Every structure is written in structure tokens, then in C-alpha cells.
Amino acid sequence: MAFLTKRKSTGRYYIKWTSGDKDLWVSTGCKSKADAMNFFLKWKYNKHIIPKNITLEYLFDDFLSYSKVNHSPGTYLIYSNFCRLFKDFIGNKQIIHLSLKDAENYKSYRYKSVAVPTINIEVRSLKSIFNYAVNHYYIDSNPFAKLKQFSVVQKKLLVFSDEQVNLILNSVKDDNLKKIILFALNTGCRISEILNLKFKDVDFYNRKISICNDSNFKTKTGKIRIIPINNVLFDLFNSNILSFNQEECFFNNDGRGYKKNYISKKFKKLIRKLRFPEDFHFHCFRHTFASKLISNGVDINTVKELLGHSNINTTLVYLHSSFNQKLNAVNKIGVFK
View: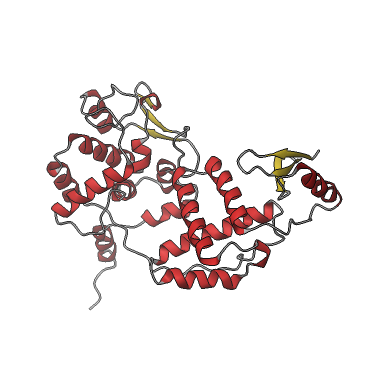
């Protein structure tokens, strides 16, 4: 059964109905209940009636309201920044008048000032937003469905060597930063996951950590992930090197939690002081964790689960052999003279 409902976030009326086990929505584009009822009556006889006055600004506002509830704060921020940039470039056009050429022009414009991976994220954002528009009957088809991303040259996966890790641990002066680094090395967690970790999610008895969603944090995939507490990490907790007298696991000397950018910048400063290559950053601890698992014979599916990847293809980038493994392999061929 379909009915009209008004959203406080937009002040506009929507039609809501259920198909199978899914709730579906379509905007009437109207703030007046009388106008919305007019649209609703026509829609009941033809569910493909498209409101002709939907503008880019209206679509973006509606999508961002949806994104704020359904995506992680990081993903929402990406969408929000893209919407602002795209609307500033294109103008507040009606979405039925947008074409593939508009997007290609935007790509060319952005190519002059930002890196290719950034543009590719924006391409995916644009396609996702207009898929949302199609699903909500704002438009018949996605004008950007055939929009292509730029090809990207594969970069070398940056992994810290054992010598580099020891140098980092011996050089870091901030005890709190050292705790965070040790935790990252032994769990493979992302920096945002570490800084949002609560002690209620650390189960010492069963030796496991739950990476969970809450009102202020969503995991990248939206799923809960369980990570075992290994012997090294268990000893760190028991020795009080990792303290637990606060709600958060990691906090500064004033008892407040850290911001992601603060830790990233502080670690980057340490890396530069040690004269490591500029490309190294905190996320390389996650790469190091995964690569160590693979090189020690851990199967790829287990690595996928520990990292929290939703697609195993993401994990396969770590499936590489060390140079010594390759050297031993080619030496088995024998000698040809």
C-alpha cells in the first residue's frame, strides 16, 4: 500500500510503498500537500511519472540526507564535497537536462588540478547519486551510466620492513602514539577504527576485539568485524602498556580522544625525521600486517576476514611473494649453460 509522507529534512512530500521486503520512495517534488496529492493520484495510475522540476541542488540535498544516515562519515564527506564541486561547475540545472558531455567536461576541468584517483572517486560518486535518482523515480535512466574512469597505473604496495618497524618503535617519543602503532601492527586496523575503539568492544576473556558501528562511527563496509587478540597484544594489555581506564582505548594526556588527522600528521612528521620515503604513511601498517600474514602462509580468505574486505579482489593485492621466495623458486629450475 502506498501513502504520502512528509520529510522534515527537506520539507517535501514523498510517496512510500513496500515491494517485497523493501521500502521504496519517490519524491513528489512538492512542499504543498495539495500539489503532492495531485502528483500522488497521477502516480497511482502510472508509477513512471517523473517530476519534471527536480534540480541538481534538490537531488544532491536529498541524496546527502540519505547518505548521512546510511554511509560512514568519511563516505558522506566525499559525497558532500563532490556535490558542492559538481554543482558549482555545472550550475543548478534540472537533472533531466544533464548529459554525458557535462560529466566529461567536469572530468577535463578537474584533471587540471587534482590527481586521477581523486577524479575516479568523483566519477563513481556521480554514477551512484544518479543511480539513486533512478531508483527514486526522479529520472528514467542514469545519464552517466557509460561514464568511464581514468586508467590508473598500479603503484607499488608500501610495506614497512622489520628494520623500519623497529626503527620507528625505537624513535617514537610519544607513548600514546607508540601504543597506537603497536595496536595497528598487531591488528591491521585502519586508523579511524583504532581511534573509535571502545573498551566495551575489547573482550579479554575470549581474547577478541569487535570493530563495531555506533552513532559516531561506521566501519567502511558497515559490517562488524572480529579480530583475535594475539599474544603480543595480550601481553601489551596485561603489562599496562595499553591502559584501559577510559571509555576510549586511545586518548591523550587530557583524557580526550584523538582526531584522525592529528595522528596522521604526527606520524608523517616522524617518518620525515627518519628520512623514510615521502610516500610512507600510517596506513602502511595495515599493508604491513596483511603482507606479514601472507608471507607466513596464512590463507587469503582468513586475511580477507581479518582486514574486513567485502571483496576478495581487494585482498589479492597482498598475494605476492617475497624476493627471497622468488629467488629460491627460480634456483630450483637448474642450470642451463
